[in-house]
Amino acid sequence: MKHSESPHLKTPDQQRSARTVDEILQSASSLSDEGLAELLSARAVSAKSGYSVGTIYRYFEKIDDVFLELFLRRRKKALKFIAQLVDSHNPKEPLIKLITTLTHMMIDEWSSKNPKIIQLVIRQYFKRSKAPEMYNAILDELIPSFMAAQVRDQSGTFKVMSMEEMRLTVRVLQMAIRNPFFEGSNFAGTPEHRRFVIDMGVKLLGRSKA
Image (cartoon, rainbow, N blue to C red; front, side):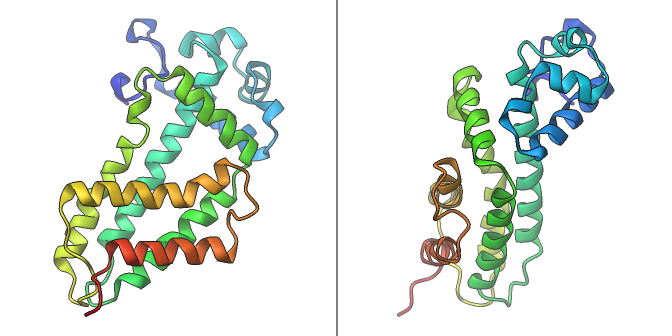
């Protein structure tokens, strides 16, 4: 793990142990999955991990940074899986099949999270991050896969677009999936929400019918 990829960890001169950091993050992950925002504390992470509060602060400046680092790692892992799904898409299959699969997968993932914890972590991200504008830049990891999919397409349903257009399209789709969960809307995760995202994905990424 490169330190430059983890801006919420302390500087390298702390002689941090990757194993200790991973175990602290695993404990934070368990607490996050339990769904109670009040569990996101140094004392709770200490009790769960078996490491002292002092040890946690040896690797993270604030307890918020534990959950920010966890959020970023989970996000990168999810994006890697999405890219793999796009890469494995059968070029003879229409775009709507890919969009439907991705939509249900991503909405199911967001539905498994506690909205209050999501809101807390995102607020802290923009407050604490040294480069908040990079929040959406991580989505650029998906662009090569989508660009390659449109080149491979044999179904005639994929629209050919530039990299910049693809970049904006990916951001719009992510926002359509994510924002209802951030806002705690009753729309989030519903069949209507899923249909909306699928329809939007097909319109933005699909070739217009003559």
